[in-house]
Image (cartoon, rainbow, N blue to C red; front, side):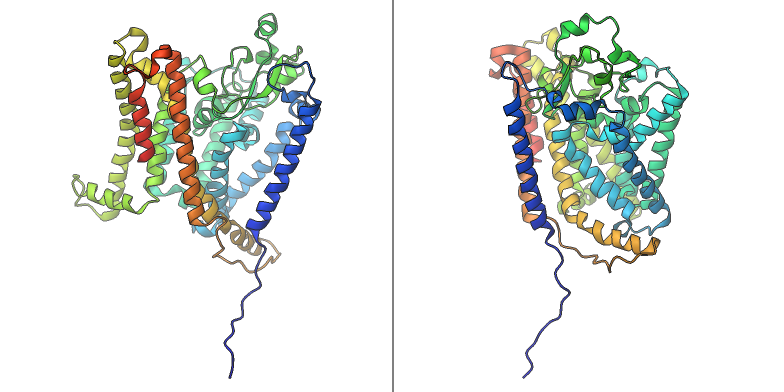
Length: 496
């Protein structure tokens, strides 16, 4: 009698096991280094530890090679994404350009906000090209004052997000390539015509959300002493000198009270002869309630991102499509072809959400204004600008939760698609690709992580609203005159 048996290919490396072991080893090394740095900290030093007291880190941030060494690999990588998007297969799950761009890069950038502030801006090849072009052109003009806001970048981000839902940009390698080309061309033109990183500060479609979410990061670059800054007649940190350039993002360290526009390029560290800058740890999200300068464009973006992230996540849950069909049946275009009707319904829902969620937050402010005695110092508009920042943790968490499945379920496809690309476009053969790889994390684990992320954001958004209300009303903050309409909206958005 023959016994049944099955022949299978030998099992590959257990990536999850090695990733876990590697994470434990890295954590051990970092913890050991942190303990050593804490032990060597001068005993008389008061206040948070200045990371620039670590000689190797101070040398790195002041080095002229610090940015180029990070930018060059990503410039080559983006060039590869463009080339593969134009010449390789139009099937997004088999084209390395879309996997690198939307599965790894975009999800990775979102995750860096939590700990590493605007670290991506240091290595961004688009920002590098606009800055290099400006150095060659020497242009010093600035945008008209009315355009020096986040409104242009916000509008461009919303247009791109809507276009993805309407045309499926992230599923098109060809469209991905041409979007990158358009960004590179725009950055070069603006670098030739306007000063410094005008493109990055005012027009980059992800620059605005990077700045908002960087308010949560637990690291800050600030002056050690404002008196020293005020007594410095040169202000080389802004104007530049022979030791370094002025701040590429038009930031003045003396007045900087948030992480929103600083990306730690190190130029101010090179130019400050008094060494009056410190890189310190601080509580997560402290900028949200301590920053003095608050703006309507930032508050609107913070609130609207909750709507955008929610609609992006909606596409990934089964009931969403049934809701869209039910809604479309009652709209004027119900008789059109199914695909066209779906696109029109999506357009209505998208732009309606972008408008209605900020309106709901404004309505909460109007109710709060009435409850607090209709004070001119706490008008609905002023309250919107103040409490809009309370929604930043929730918007970031929704983006994180939405991108977890993309990263851990679709991310494993990068390995076989990389094999296919090397086999097809080079003389080398690096093995037959398996286009059904195991996920890096199983779905139940991802769902648990998503829930924990959203619950943490709920608590932090509530805490941010509490701190903002303390600054607005003092000890009476949780009386009926307090921010309860905002707390109710935060809970409602989280439940949704």
